[in-house]
Length: 126
Image (cartoon, rainbow, N blue to C red; front, top):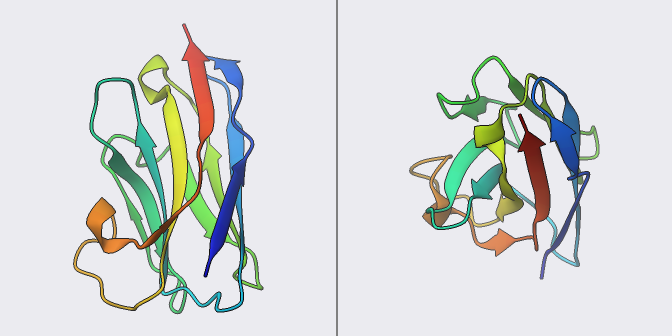
């Protein structure tokens, strides 16, 4: 079992920054990919950023490239999302996800992840 707990979401003004964290734990906590997803009311959950735990390759949605940075700590048990130049359209619930089976077709695809956190709310006001 894997447990993921997000933190760091809050309300900020446009142009501001936030850093989200996701703490992972569990008796069999070995991940191949980690990702950040977001879901706004009435919209599908979308991939924002992902990172391969072994090689540290990173992947970003076009809408956040150049503004968001995904990273992990050296122990690979905490995932971060640094969000800069925030826009009102970034407002959403942000979820951390883990892929623990090693099969991956799309690092930004929600169906490739088998564990999810409960989410942390990010609200950006204009």
